[in-house]
Amino acid sequence: MSTPTMPANPIGAFFARVGAPRRPWLTGAVFVVTAAALVAQLADESLLGHVQRDATAIDAGQWWRLITGMFFQDGGLRGGIFNLVALAVVGTLAEWCFGRVRWLVLYFGCGLFGQFLSYVWLNPVGAGNSMCVAGLLGALAVVVLRTRAAQPPRGLFVAAVLIGPLAVLDTVVHDNHGMPALLGMVLGLLLSPGRSAG
Image (cartoon, rainbow, N blue to C red; front, side, top):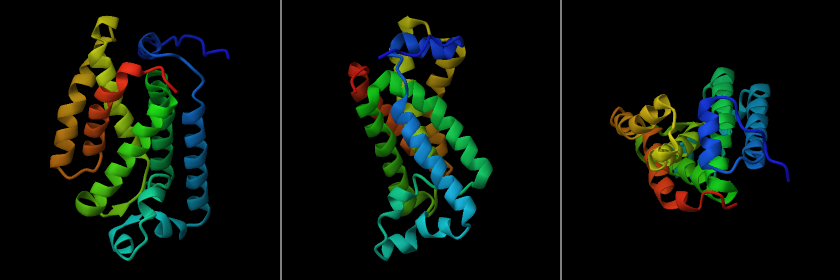
């Protein structure tokens, strides 16, 4: 199967060197499902209330909201578009570096972790795939730090160094993206040696 051409931008070129550039089929599939969910909730404004993370409803037995909360968006059209663009970019780079099986573990593992912590502690009502993307971002930060010999662009390296402290600060101020990013860093340490699998 043919692989994508090498990216022209320095960040994409770096991840192409340390990963295995491939067509991001998995990222694309999750993108399509998430985009379809956004369109559905925009078409029916009452839908979000039935699928978002809601501690009261979860306590009443609607545990599946922890899953559906990863596909629908509480930020409306603007927030949804931002999250979809982030998924497309970060997801593609993560799929190159970790392969598809590990991508699934990172994306949905970190997303579900974030949903659960939000339910029990940080933010009991909400929805969005941004915590899933935060997990991928944390894992990619580890890739950058572990492959410094591959000469990442300076700005990318600085950003990777800052991900951990910012994730801790994010958690301290009770935002729900910090803990998924930290879990992504831990999983990135565990999963990055076999990046090309999947």
